[in-house]
Length: 464
Ligand code: FCB
Image (cartoon, rainbow, N blue to C red; front, side):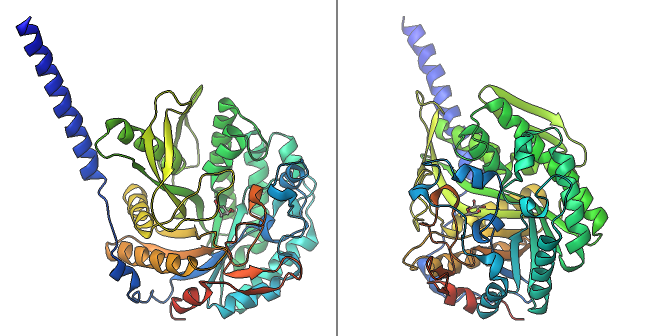
């Protein structure tokens, strides 16, 4: 009996040591970083000349007047908070010159925007010349103002004909998307240096096919996996088409990444949960591009497949950053873990998705990780905060610049920052309540006025 107890005690001891050893290993390989209050308060070192400093927008969120899978979704009762719709949005379609002037006043030298596929190809194979001309004119206006255009081809919304054929999960999505990319490259390429094929493919897949909260409102892991593969194939085909049409094109994807940390650094389950989610959410898409092989696992569906044309298809890593979460293993819950927001500036995004926060240390760690994995130049393709009072945006921008400076000092090639967003807009299913704009939108008059943080953005602009 005694011997048995000794053996059991020995085994337990070995397990405890192994447990602590593994936790210690993870803790050392995933160090915490903190910026002091003094560091965040001191004037940031100026960003270098040539650093891309701009705002980011998406067609459907600011233009108004679109007809696509989202406008169809918006017509469903209860789809959008308070029954709001994108019908007018910020009326950017009719106010492009005014909005370029806003960019000038805040000393932006770059602008990331999306071109709306549903406007440009309202029926399959039929181009809308007037719409192409208007985007061409926007590119010209930006160039004249010394503002570098960065164009996104797909920022969530699809033409109805593409949605009806099965959207991004349809077998012919890559070909149709590549045809659109070729047309964009041919028509706009001479004025556009940077291209983003896809905005946040992980969000599009998860919201549309796992949660079913966004178009096409599916809750099906096998379809989610098909959508993920379709987005990868679409990206590869579009990147090739862009480069063929516009040999100088620099191509990337805007990846939504969040810092996911274990709730307790002593709990092995919390580590395993956070590391699994980190791989699934943050890096699976970009790793597939690096390796030429798509791999994800969802409950009830897995994908492990070689995809042609992925390797070498990006010239930079686009990083959209908003959230940091603590992950806790929670056996018995459907997902097996829960995510909790950490301390920091608290975004008002709220609503149906969890409230997040955006400490600059998290952005720093994510840039460092992306650099370690891909050794590609990084553009922060989005960063921002829903901030109705306008008190958090300035400190957020300051902190994000501090993170960029630190990463650059460590040799990470960060080349640009696009603040989300230029002017308050239609924030998907949350409607107009979250205000992300450096300019406040009066929804009645559509007038734009500088919001809290616009002064900080202007002051931190790199020299011309
Ligand atoms: C990002 C989206 C963008 C906007 C911001 C707040 O995930 O790319 O369209 O909704 O969040």
